Length: 170
Image 1 (cartoon, rainbow, N blue to C red):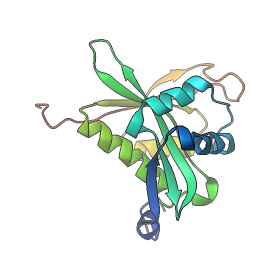
Image 2 (cartoon, rainbow, N blue to C red):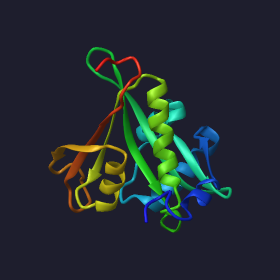
Image 3 (cartoon, one colour):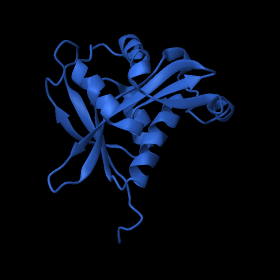
Image 4 (tube, rainbow, N blue to C red):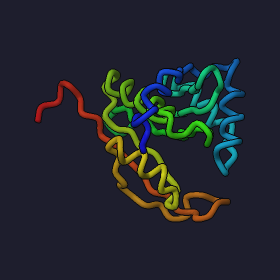
């Protein structure tokens, strides 16, 4: 039923990831327009480009079908955390492992760079997204009322995940 089950393994082999650069940032803009009910400003795209390898486009058989866009944030004490601004896959390509590949890319990269916290906002009625992130160990850590301006419901959950680091002692 979920990504990676049944034919998902075979389909996942057809998924490739590519970085977002000035020359292909329009692909990200087009995907966001198709996927999300809000319009993103120039700062979003500047943050996505600045995050380097943490922002990726996903291709299924050479067709751009999804993306993950992150922002790297400095916390008090100097630690870096990853904020997932957006992760989306076009509806006909959901369930094929595209979102899983995008999220695993960011989780693996965070682990390699000793980044131990990742978080994101999800609209409170987006049950599919909440279930997706929970499968990867994300937990609802907060609710923010009236987070979204022009969509209903306006509330969001904050979902967070702490990544175990190899050098941490238990």
